[in-house]
Image 1 (cartoon, one colour):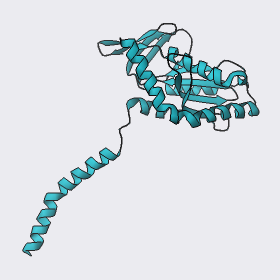
Image 2: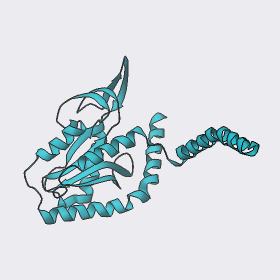
Image 3: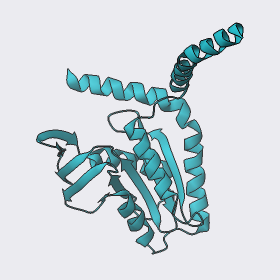
Image 4: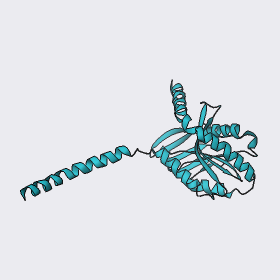
Amino acid sequence: MEIIAILLATVFVLAPIIGAFALLANSVSRPKVSSHVRCEQGVSYALRSLDPRSYVVLDNLILNSNGNTAHAEIDHIVVSPYGIFCVVTKSHQGYIYGSRKSARWYQYLGNYKFPINNPFRQNYKHVKALDNLLDSSLKTNIHSYAVFPNAKKVKVDGEDGVATVEELVRNISQKKEIIYNKSDCEHIIKLLAQAKSTSSDLKETHINEVCAYLSSKSI
């Protein structure tokens, strides 16, 4: 009986320690997901609520670029008979104010004001990269959208294109003029799928390019 009591006491003492190690191991084995990645995942999930018979969504394509870096990473592309949509996702919180033509927008968090880059400047390079890839396959301009899933309010003067996630899906779904036939869409999707197959190989290269560019701007 004494041995059993000792064993039970040992179990009660070790149980919290074993549990702590288990939680630690679980947290180590499960990588943290950044706020920006969560935003991108949420936008991707919402875009996939569009009718899959008419809309194809591709995420995180890295294409050749003539911009500040040799490559551009596009958050989301939607291909449909009604047009092609290029979407950049931003994870900024608070209140966002700006102008479509201004290089700088402003983010307000409480009493603090922070300058942020105009996301349409970034998405313009993404659209140009798509233009270069798709070239003669395009029959009309690519639609450019910027979405802020975490922001409380976004107010931008100028052309449309800034949206909440719900507005983004609604705006895309409301365009009903047929521009591309089935064969056109299949060809465009094939070109993008081929580019997608090499995106993972270019990921580290693109990150290094962006870091080098940002370092050069800070000198």
